[in-house]
Length: 88
Image 1 (cartoon, rainbow, N blue to C red):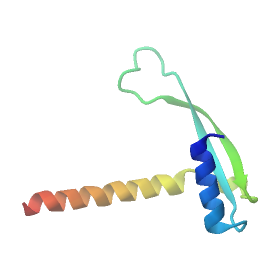
Image 2 (image 1 turned 90 degrees about the vertical axis):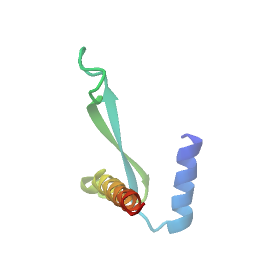
Image 3 (image 1 turned 90 degrees about the horizontal axis):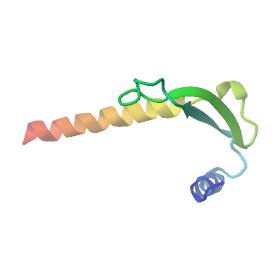
Image 4 (image 1 turned 60 degrees about the vertical axis):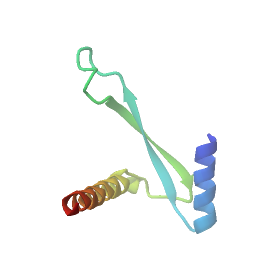
């Protein structure tokens, strides 16, 4: 376990104590076919579910929540930037 992972897990433990079901979905990426390297994203070759604390339901381990949060933050940041540009 890296120092970053240990720090994150200890922060989760301090915030929630033992009252949390927490897991990670780790996506593994592989090489893309030759000729599509430069601008194509890497191909997802598999996923690994890893329980970090508690007993999470394996059916609910996904990246959907964090991906939606990232989209929301990008959209809000874009609107704020656009508002600043239009005001000046």
